[in-house]
Image (cartoon, rainbow over all chains, first blue to last red; front, side):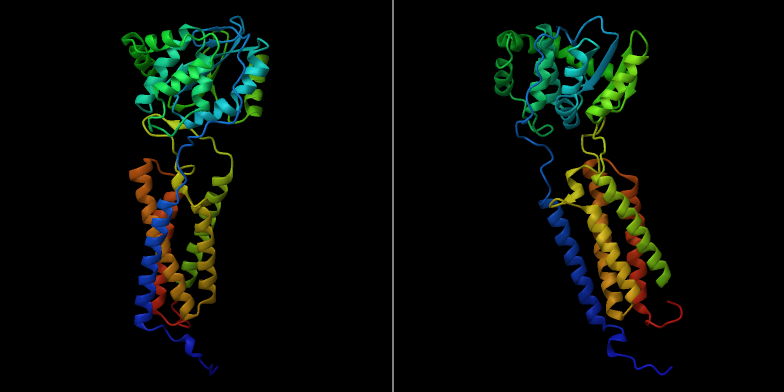
Length: 236
Length: 136
C-alpha cells in the first residue's frame, strides 16, 4: 500500500537525539539531587505524644516486670537507639503491660543488646542502674518516647537527668553514680556479648518462654499479633 | 526487538508494582546487628519528597510501555530518554544500597541492575531502525 509517510515518521536528526540524551542526563542528575535533598530525616527527634505506660503497682525486680510466679515470660532484646524498638514500646508494649503483665498472666524481661553505638552502651548502663532500684521499665519507656536519631548524640546527661527525675521513687544521684561505674560499664558490654552469642540478629527480638522451656521467637508488629502470641503461649 | 522492549517494560511494571505495594504494606522494621536500622525499603532513601521511588518507577515504566506501543520516531526517542534517566537513577540507587545503607533488597537490585539497563539498551537500539523495519 502506497502509504503517505508523514514527516514525523522519519528518524529524528542526530542533533535532536544528542540533545535529547543530554536532557536525559541532566534530568537524571536533577532527580538524584532531588532525591538526596528531599529525604525525610531518618530519625524523629520529637518527643512522642503517646502517654507514658503506667507501671505503678506492678512488681519489678531487676530486668523483670510482673508477677514472679507468672508461667509465661516475654523476653525483649532491644537497643535504646533502635527506632523499631521505639515503635514496639509505643504501639505494642502498652497492650502487653495492661492486658497481660498487670493481671499477672505474663511477666516481661528486658535484655539490653546495645550494639548500635556509644549511646547504646550509655543507655544500657543507665538502664542497669535503674534496674538496681527496680525502675528499669519506667526508664526504658522514657528513653524510647524521647528517642532521637540513631547515633546523633541525643542521649545527653541532661536528658537522662530530666527523664529520671520524672520517675517517682528513682534516686537520680544514685542512678548517675552507679551508671558511671566500671562495673556497670562492663555489664553493658557483657549484655551485648551475651545477646550476640545467643544468636540474636537484630532488635527488637521478642521471645516467649513457657516455664523453663527453651524460649521461642515471635514476630509481632501490632497489638493484635502480640495478643495472639501470648494467648497461644498461655494455653500451652 | 520491539516485543523484547515491551516485555522488559512489562517486567519493570511488575517489579515496580510489587515494590510499591511492599512499600505501603506493613513491613516489620528491624535493626540488624552488624548493620544499621534502615532497611532498604523503609529507609529515607526510598522516597523522593514523600513519593515512594517504586511508584515513580511504576509510572515511568508505564509511560515507556505506552511509548513503545505508539512507536512513532519521537515516541522511540522519548522511550529511550526516559529509560536512560531510569538507568542513571538506578545506578545511583545501587550505590546507595551498597555504600550508604549497607543493605540491598533483591527486587530493587533486579530492577536497578537488570531491568533498567536492559530497557535502556533496547530502547536506544530501536532508535537506529525505521518504524516499519521488519527486524524491529
